[in-house]
Figure 1 (cartoon, rainbow, N blue to C red):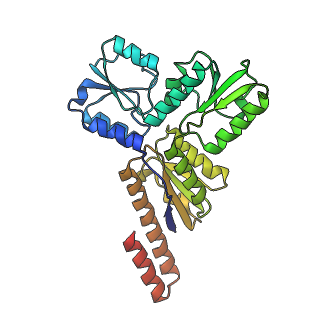
Figure 2: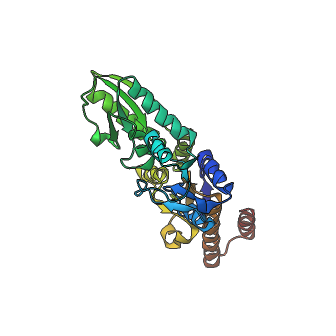
Figure 3: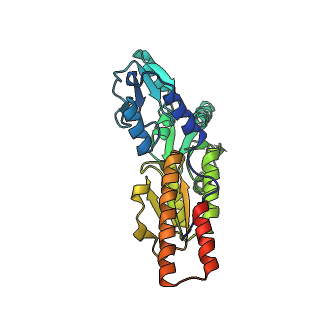
Length: 307
C-alpha cells in the first residue's frame, strides 16, 4: 500500500492564529472560551488541560463567570459582542478575518436593502454569528431548500467552508427560481478551504481511497469526505491515529491522506505514521508469501526509511 498526501491540507492560518493567542494568555482560568475554539477534540482537550473555562456552543446564552471571554475563530454576531460588553466582560477576539469578511459582506448586502440568502449549514456557529445581525434572511444548505423569495432584491453570501461546486449549483438554482429579482453575489468561501478542496479533487484521481483527518463536527472536514464519496472514492473519517482500522484498507493499493483546517500537524503526522506502518507490514506480508527479487526488496526498504 502506498500513501499520498494532498498538496494542501490541515490547519489554516485562522486556526493557527487563534491557538497562538491562547498560548499567550497568562491566566487561562480567568478566560471562558465562548464555544469551541475550533472543531477538534484534541485541541479542546489541550485547552481544558491548560485551565481554560469552556462553554458549549449550545449554552453560549449563559453569562460567563470569568472576567474575560474569548471569541472563537468562528466569530459571533455584533449583537452578541454588545451583550458581553454590557455585562462587563473583556473580549479576547480570535475571529478568523475571512469569517469577519463573510459577516461584513452579509451586512453590506442588507444595508443595500437586499434579502440575504446565506448558503451554509443551519445552526452552525459561524452561520449563527452572521444571521443574528440580519433582519431579513434565509439559510440554504442545499438545492432542495432554495425557493422563490418575496424580495425583488437578493444578496447571496456563503459560509466560508462550503464547497465551491455546491455553492455554484445553489447559486444557479436561486437565479433560476428568482429570475426576475436583482441578485448580487459575494463569494465568501475562504481561500484555504478552496485550496484544500482543489487538492482533494486532484487526490481522488490518483488513489483508491482517502483518509480524512479532523473533528467529527468540523464542517470543512466532513465536506472533504463528501467530495470523495461524490467522486466514487471511499473515505475514512478519523479524528486520530488510534481510529485507523487496518481492516478497512483491504484491497486498496494507493491511499490518500488529507485533513480539515482545524487539524493539528501532530495529529496528521501520527495518522500518516500509522498508515506507513500498515503499508510496511502489508508489504512484508506480501514479501513472505511471494519472495521478491532482491532489488525490489531494496527499493521498498529505501521507501520505508525515507517515510
